[in-house]
Image: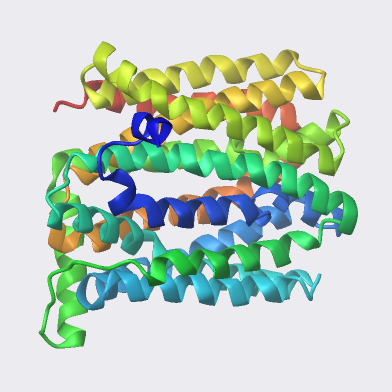
Length: 400
């Protein structure tokens, strides 16, 4: 208990514990996110095809983000999130039974659709619960601890994934991910939701809610800049993220699929520690926009070293360092953005953020696969940092 009191703020577990448990369960067992590229390469897909799958997921998200966000704002974030978990579990289970590219493409589109039921509603549910209980001081703590707890889940996922893949093969990742989504619903079912109910007509309400969120996002100066920077960062992450380029690069350097599970565990350890550096960074650099810029400058410098790496152990360390910085970046970004958004349109506006991410995936992932197949994985990763330069400039110039 004394250790918990040092790690968590007063009443933090009371109001956020069940959400933390939900995050931990999904990260610990959702092996799809750990071995995705390895699996599809093993069944004969190329990087371009893998990019198309993630692009299809993005299209599903893009088409449904704002409507489902508006529905969550109007009729309940809790119902939306639980439905999203269960429907996504069913879709992912279907992937276990097929290796047909076109069928898998449709299923990834449906994954994107089910994701929209959770994306904006989840954070809106948490933040408005805290505001209802007058616990605004826990909002930033949530973003920090969620990142660390999520990385604790990655540690478990790496170890569990290495064991399961060694014993049963890569196909087991779909069963494990399905189980994770079902189990993660349990703590959410017993969690209350506090929201402002709206009794206007459904069709008019969804349209009105969507218009309000879009208008707010376009006219609000900081939100507009944050969304532009978000798009740039997501485009970069498709070139240098672990899912599509790093996994085949490590395989090219000689790593085995199950050993990658241990690499993921190392990344999880780094990710647990990194969010706790956010507060010291905040004391050193007051403006959150400047913090975001500096973190991405370090990212560029680290990625350039990939040009000279020929050992998968060193490459794994570089990947861990990149994700270490990313785990500091995202809580700061999320907190900075959520401070700008009014409560009544929080889920809908957050869904616009998810829609921007989906748009980046749609455009860029197939392109990344094609470029990686053409110029090689090493150059694709090491030169990707150039993409971040416009975002760094915008973050640095962004006034409070």
